[in-house]
Image (cartoon, rainbow, N blue to C red):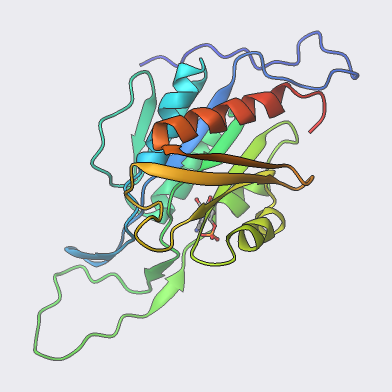
Length: 238
Ligand code: C5P
């Protein structure tokens, strides 16, 4: 399928009016990753990908061009979106890395598995009645890796799934990962974000920017998030 034509912006714009993309290309990650330690067993998390898919649909509805890199989820492909299925954090890193250059906005909603087994056994491990010890190593931080080679005109948005001190922990990620905005998301208790139809986010920026989104359906929160990002992209300075 041919790529849609993207006008990369900046043409005829003076220094007083810094870069504002004319047609916005957005890269979104969604869902969990799976880290296998034998062909039939893996470590993962309860992310369903609903929030990321809702954001992809909202971005498309706003007229943006959307690349969606998704871990294993059971969701229909949003219309008009280029979907890139991946399984592991390493695959997600490679796929987002390949799509990052032309994107104006990166929204990392994926619940990347933070550790992967050090050893992946090629055959199914046999049960012998004994326990099993699996040694883990950290996976690469996709957002932090991409942020190292970002252009200043790109807008980088992370998600912070927290069970306590939601805003403080989310704010700490802005510096640690080198991103512009973080959507703080409580995943504590039965009302937490994982798998729920409803969500509430607090969008936080380095400059003190703070905007609550929701509580509302994930589709409505996604539309609010895209509207907030569109406003920031249109602002003369950010
Ligand atoms: O460090 P933490 O997992 O709390 O950060 C969450 C944010 O970082 C999310 O946007 C998530 O998609 C992203 N992330 C990542 N690579 C990882 C872990 C998280 O890009 N290995």
